[in-house]
Image (cartoon, rainbow, N blue to C red):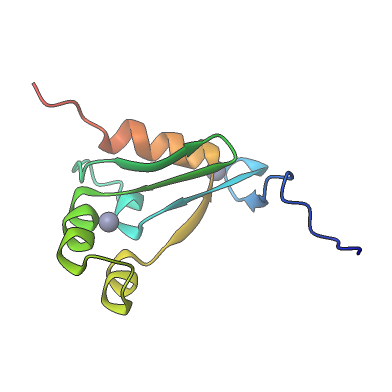
Length: 97
Ligand SMILES: [Zn+2]
Ligand SMILES: [Zn+2]
């Protein structure tokens, strides 16, 4: 049995801002940079498999109950690099006081 796929290897992408980096997944709403916090709900904190979506997506997912077409259309999964992921976290994960 031979395969070129190695699950231990993190997926990397070529980020326009950060160069070749490990890939992470965000919802489209977390790309907002107009200063408004949409919340940051982390679904996977595995270093090589980071995934997060916003509060609206969290609500939408709760509404749908699973990964439906409607949810996917709302979420519009975006692959970014881990640095962009951290940027989004800093921008949107505003602690409630
Ligand atoms: Zn979202
Ligand atoms: Zn980046």
